[in-house]
Length: 214
Image 1 (tube, rainbow, N blue to C red):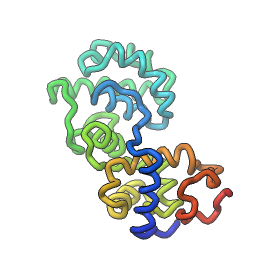
Image 2: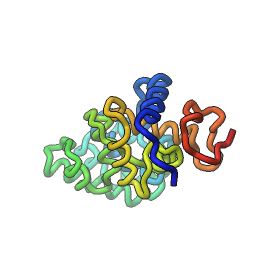
Image 3: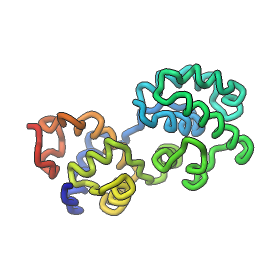
Image 4: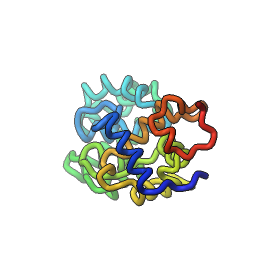
């Protein structure tokens, strides 16, 4: 495991990320907060591109919890059958939609605890929604962020919760809002798992990764 980078180096890393892309965006398509929750929940063990392909027509038909319930389990299943674990995910979407209608008047709650209580919504999903929709500096740690954080020394931890804490503890507050998007995009496209594109990396001189592929 890499050592944790110091404050000044981390500030320089995120200054470079910010200069390259001032306001990074998540890649999951959505039309409102409800469809964002559904899209993020569906993205577990699936690619954003695959989820977007499946949800484009779904969200045209069902962009509220009630419309999703009206579509029914079979309808939802048919729309998302190209996504991994689609049968279980379809059941969770219907259960989630029913709870939102029954307990929240069809609205999506904006507290982490309430979000995490919804079927199919874990800590990562809740953090993505809190960050992307409500602008909270919540850090959703996925495989890309976990790999990049540990490999580079930006946010070191033995599990996703430890890395989430490391991000909150070590990344300067003025970068917290967009931190997880910068990290996920860097991990997805540059600091990839098997052959990281170190030669094209804008922070290669600051990163602690010992096996740089230059």
